[in-house]
Length: 175
Figure (cartoon, rainbow, N blue to C red):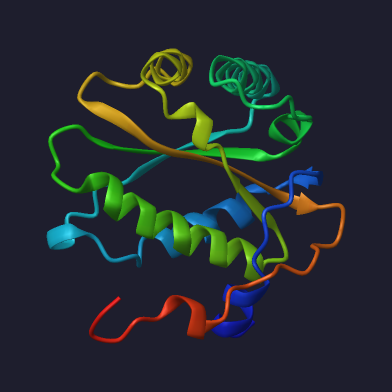
């Protein structure tokens, strides 16, 4: 798949027919290794969650976080049907989260190329929920969670997405 096509067709689909398998996850994480990073720090490490009981706990945290934030209820079954990848980084590395965001974008694009979908679980980035997630994965105290994503084979086709025109968003020299 061409990069342009992956960029333009990538969608977040929260309904999986199956989890991404190990070979697919290895390819997705390998794509992350080529992401730019601040001062070439490459601060990322990855925890892959495959065991069903851990997926169930993370699903529970996701539902709890959405409730705490007052976000509408959502069917979170996709979390247990996918493969969860947690991106962690050292606490002391400056700009580690930005570097991990670049890695995550590469992962999402690679998933698209593999005809998979990736979903970022952004609500898990609250301090209380992160502590609980860190306990589940036995995260060392010198590490922090940067992002959590779930990958799987979508069981429905993505819908077209309305994109703003360049004319609406580009401002040359002045706003």
